[in-house]
Length: 225
Image (cartoon, rainbow, N blue to C red; front, side, top):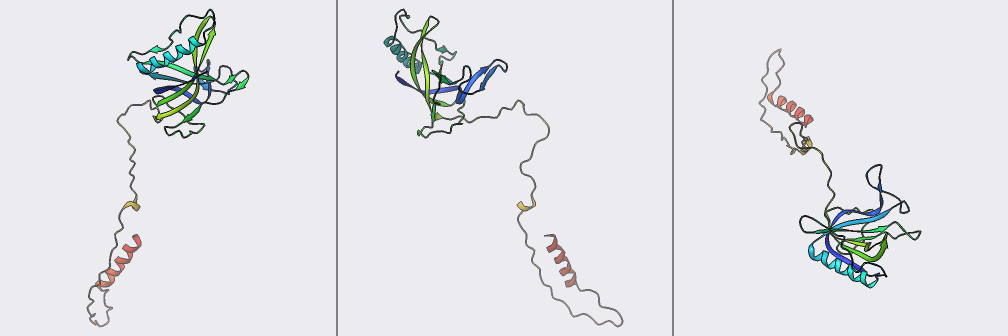
């Protein structure tokens, strides 16, 4: 079937790094092996009115070109219209088709560089999505599915850590801890002072000179430094 590229849409809850399926016990989608029940790669996306119109027109053309007998005369629009006038839809790829594990959708950046296999695309990122149209009849209802083939990341929104708390009074971590090695080194220079000739005193030892005290103080200061 023909390939179609949906351009400049907002990624919603992308699960492309590996296959996922819904776990009823946990009430959410969880990673799984490609051959697990209902395993798939998927991405929902939000698009403006013009993009949605172009996509639906292309899907309708594919539907009419492959319409079987007793199928509905025209394609039913299954896009969800948001309150802001934009539309959301979904593209997916099952982990297994016809008992064979499917090839993982390609992820590239804006310059077409291949992204890592474990790259986690985020909700809010702007992407181009390559899909293939597959008309189908299931349970008496006909439509055209979008099989996910590749995603080009035009604008990436980094993952944000979830913090359940609000700011409050109390302990505040100071990132600039006191560090003696951050202080500028001060070099103390010894200044020599003139030493007067000691006076001779009979039977008494001469007292220490001021220069001697200064030298001792200098040694202590040097040691502390």
